Length: 629
Ligand SMILES: [Zn+2]
Image (cartoon, rainbow, N blue to C red; front, side, top):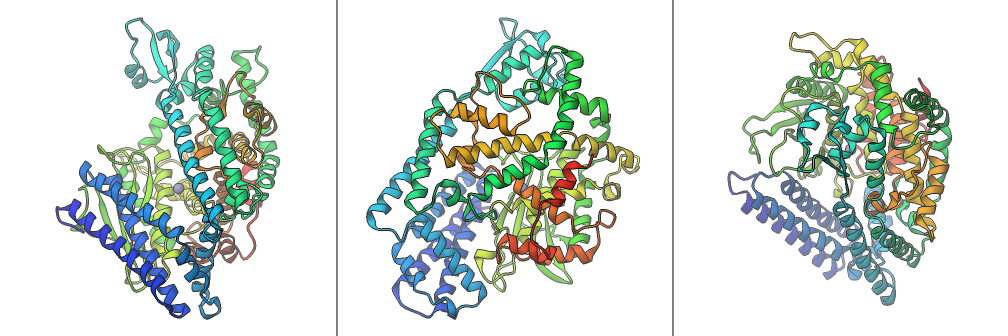
């Protein structure tokens, strides 16, 4: 890494890698060679592309200098353009499809199979007319999708409330929401206004007004756009020989088949019925104490009364909780916990060059051997990526380059919310996955290279270690050095568990919407929303609203919204192999490390899970979790 000239270093690094990728593609197309040599060149192409994308995406999100960030964005665009070009290269496809798979080892065969599948999915093997149509469809899909998302971003609405209607909101919220000249307070449908108001605002009528605006964002302009997008995707999938977009999309996911999506949704709906009804009754009863005339719960009251129930029934004081989560101790605890769990050690590298002085750098060691390096960039600053995520810096390749990964988060330097502690463990799960899976010869298998609907499962599972009282007590101590009380952790868990059945049902409504709209494009999308909400959600449809117009995931996730719940089901199944009373049993955790994490993308996720559990994945652990009160 550079000393000071980041812009120059980044440009040189990306240019060198992209040139290498282009040169290897040219080599592949130039001469004939044996299967092993062909696949070695293809691996070099993949490696050069991964190297470029990793560093470009990272730097464009974290570097303090805006000019360097723009350089990263440009490098990423160059890399994406080249990737598209490679993916549509008929000549290259012909070279790879001529490779004799029998002459390859298992890894090579898998890399070849995946590459040919990707080429076919892009339509490279189709005749010219079809390829032209696919290009037109893809271009229009991108345009429509961008406009759909832009309308949501720009479609901010507002209500104006009397200051008295802000009763219930915390002090800092009130401070930031002073009345304007006309004496009213403006609240917008943006999350920083919407979420606190729906959670804490005591005025039910005002909540209903804000909700109505929220559920009508980008209406009506996005209705026709969505319909066009759905129709474009349907044609795109059908022209490639699929029965619809869900089948096309699911082919590269762990779920495997489009038809498995509605089966999954119906199964989760069924198993969450009891838990959902139980929690719904609690919410409705509490709502009726204040409003005896109301007979159903909808989103007007959902967040507000969930909060009331958590406060009244579980008595968790979040101010008190925070005193146990000092950032420095939490970070040390995280390294200690994951080190024990995975048999690794973190050795700080104090003089490592970095893009910012906040970044802590550690070498990851196992039995004296260096596996890779992690960079923890955990506090907010101007111009930095403002969520929490893991980024790659270098993909690890056996004998060629060590894995380096980065956590980019925005935590307080002092006391943390417990939610943030859970997030830290979650994101660290991706980081450790990246490092441990960094020792394959094939770039295609390196790091978090499994199917998209599986990648969250290891991280969701690692969250369990941030909820265990014994483990929390090992690092969560207050200023006096007292560990967090076990009773407090139990109450935190109970409060967190409340509403999980309700959550599952709402998620299945979203998942069903995402699947059904793509499988059978309806004439009247609002009618489909009403119908699917009635079937899957336990909360009622709010009259005269059009949720789909601002359901942004329909753009990015397409028919795959189910993935959130899918990976949670898998996470619970993975966790079932651990004994809750022996969370550091290394016989289990090392097997998990070797068979799930270190395996990277070398096998299908379903096979990884079966290797670890010694049986196919199942729903039982999730069902048990859902129904334990
Ligand atoms: Zn994640």
